Amino acid sequence: MKDVFDPNLLSELVDQSHNPPGGDPVLGAFYASLVEMVVSGEPIADILMRVKKRRSDITYKHLVNLIYRAFQAIKFRDQDLSYRSLLDIGGWHKELKSLCSNIETKKYFEKLLRTKSTTTTIYQRYTGPYAIVAHFWDSTPVFIADLGCGGNYGLRGIEVGIPFHSVEDQTPGKSVSSLLSKRINLQQCLAVDKENPDHPKVREWRMACSFYPQELNLMDAAFEFESRIRKSTKVKFRKIDLLSSARLPRASFNAVILSMILYQLNLLQQQILIERAKRLLKQGGIIIVQDYAAKNLADPRHLDFNESWFGKNFSFRTFILGKRTGWIFWEVFHWNNGRCQIVRPGEDFARIFKKHQVSSAKAAFAHSTS
Ligand SMILES: C[S@@+](CC[C@H](N)C(=O)[O-])C[C@H]1O[C@@H](n2cnc3c(N)ncnc32)[C@H](O)[C@@H]1O
Image (cartoon, rainbow, N blue to C red; front, side, top):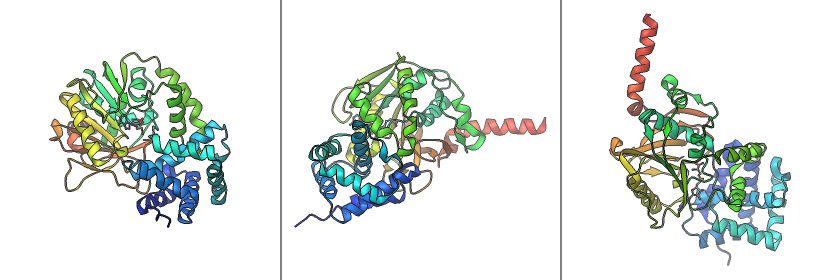
């Protein structure tokens, strides 16, 4: 008798079909087609079930996220972008059936799902960490580590001075925009990932991960960006599986960034990684977490990662954690999504920016009375 399709996996697929990443309708059609195919027991359902069994610690969100990336990696390999505006569910059935009917392609697809992690890397995501570092350290020398750096865009881009795109800033006093205009004083930094971002194969996979269909026209700009960040000299990269016992320098960094890595880990792994990140911190340092996550209401020492990524507005968030927060997560910013074009204050924004708000209120008062 055939196994029943995993209901948690199905519910994530349904969520993606209703709320596709980036609101991209092509992705909506891709996932809607997948839902129909798994419900009617097509071979792709068996592939997904096998992957979940053999890679038991993969989170449902991560697996569902990987499916489109693996499909896109195969299309890039075959230099075929004909799917980029495919809105017809029937058309997607054909695409996915043809993927499964070729034994070599099917094996490769399954291997990607079994072995790869999504490595989507977005420079603009580093606006949140940048603003926080600029707020706390201003222009004093600052040492930063980026764990799960993907393409290692963040610290290298900041070091070589690549500007972020402008942000629609809905925070009081437009604090984020004003912090982004400051220059932080980056010292020797560390970027870690389990894959070397500059290896050609890793780069190829990252490209397959980094673009929704409607963003494929941005690929040339990404290549150009990657050639600019090669000039970086202050960011040392180390290829380490952060869940292994590899040693990292202790008490060496003012800020440790965990951007879009925790959602790929189960609860125990998340706790291990946060403990490791803590050991990297200098006195007074902070961990900056960004993810589709929410503070656990019962226990704010933890985050919940079961948020619908695109169902609810502004569920991509920036948190800080450190001695100064009493080791509970403070939610600093809400973003429109992981592309970070619009920012709103998070629940704990005022605790962090109190001083800033007082001084901008004073400035406004002085202005109104002058
Ligand atoms: C979605 S990418 C995020 C890239 C970048 N931080 C950003 O936000 O744009 C997540 C990265 O975490 C890395 N990663 C996941 N688990 C890891 C582990 N156990 N050790 C090291 N890196 C890991 C993956 O290889 C991937 O490059």
